Length: 154
Image (cartoon, rainbow, N blue to C red; front, side, top):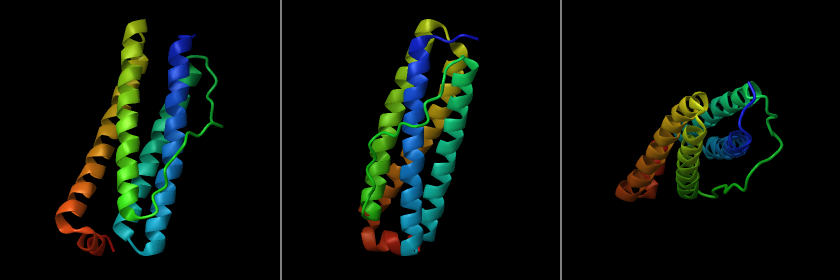
């Protein structure tokens, strides 16, 4: 089925964001593992896997719409140098993703592409869970203090 050119571009833009997020989460995950923060290592790794699943769905949809997935583009990513920096970078990235997915849904509705709208809505819910997790981590750091928070992550 031949897809709308604007929708295909938006899907490729979202794909670049997901591929970037995979890289960022994997680096954060491995940094936490290296520092002995096993709970954070697992949480960041799970989010990277979620982003991989999103990328897979986007690639599938682009192919279905007879487009070409662009898998060679990564966006700028902020790698945190501390756990607190990681949480803030992830929260910022997820906020950007939520806005971008909402914009993509609006574009899909405008051109009558309900299949894309439904797929993107599912990804959007995952991104909302991701930002909720980052917000909870930030709040725990604020309330417990960084040292107590990190002690609970080991």
